[in-house]
Amino acid sequence: MTRLDKIGPESLQFSPQCADKPALINMKRIFWPCVVLLTAVFVFSLTDDPLRAEAGVLVLHVEDVQARPVRGLEIGIEGEGGSGITGDDGKVRIRLARDTKPGSWVTLQILHSPHGTDFVIFSPLERRTLVPPFGNESGNFVPVTVIQRGDLAALQDGTFVGKLVARINNERTSNAAANDPVLLLWQDPNVSVAIVAKHFGLPPDEVERAIQAWTTKKTDSFDVGQAALYRRDYKKASQAFSESARENKEKEADSYNFLGQSLFWQGKYLESATAYQNSLHLRPHDTAVLSLLAMSLKYAGDYTDAELLLRELLAFQQANLQANNPLLGDSKANLAMLLTDIGRYAEAEPLFRDALAIHRKPGARNANVARDLNNFASLLGLTGDYAAAEQAYRTGLDIDEEELGINNPIIAYDLNDLGVVYMDMGDYECAEPLFDQARSIAQDALGPDHPLVATILENLAGLYDIQKNPGRP
Image (cartoon, rainbow, N blue to C red):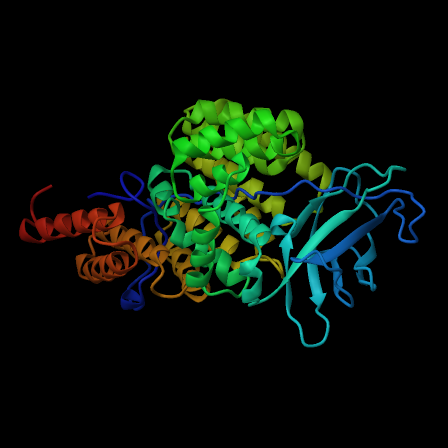
């Protein structure tokens, strides 16, 4: 029986057809990594500005995508921490939680938009920003860019579209799971486009058209690299980002980061790791790049160094972040996945449970919860707890369907893997309709030649062979 963790694209779970079946599940799913890509930010200073920075206070400058100050926006810090309303100049001071130290990461959130508007944070990426040392230097503030949800006019802005392409590229790499099959899913840009477009309330087809127009006009080596990475022309992307790293000091750290991504997608994991190390040399505390470096080392087969890096990252975050910070959940889940891969299930289980507890907090992304549930279900199946595994799979699939829609290709991965589970349990009657539904979704969404379709068809063939020869081992 061909499984996604052996061959093609990825997985998740659930089968409405089998809701009345006893809890059966065997775990062989693929792991979705919790890599979060962040942008570096600057904070705090003592200047003549009336909104000068001070210890324990975060200064934000909020603008829209046209670089116009946004007035009357209530923005704050997720979890413990204060909030404030932007003035006419788009600036606001926010009190940090008492124990927040320089070097800590905080997550921003919009509490209320001005009347008649619905803003969403565009940058910093993932709404997370680093608190640097408090210092008496000018320019120490956090720039925040917001976009009106559903604002099609933003797609006419080349700068916005360029950042959107970078965000989609980041989304794809950050969701590259811990097994080769998952890579095949996230190489399809349409999946990442749909996720990012939904977040900003934009039609995916309009986003795609804007990106196609943008990619034909780029001459700057960094933008050329982004366009090539988006088109999956990884060789060209690597060349462009290498050139950008040499020539553009302002974007050198980011260039090395994206060079690492383009090399990773070519399967050049050690070279990818070197690029990430170069990025970290310029931006030492970038936890996103640390996570990507660990992933590259893992794929290169260097589990020892990957584990060491993830544990050091986790220790740093535990010392500097609040216990319910989503970044802490991401790191725990990544370490749990690596430990599962090398068969250390007893160590992985509590880390998965901790990650789920953190990501289930109010305000956490549902996608994170679904990913955690699916990966944890895989571990539960490996340890023989099929009832708990099935429940986790079903809950995760419910979230995926709500977030992505029932025809998203990720749902096909889910259904295929659940079909494999029922195959392992000998419940062929329940497995067959799952494979059929998965095949239909995959063919419609990805085309008949996509590796996932071939995997599902192979599984169906194996099922039919078993049914024809029930006594054969």
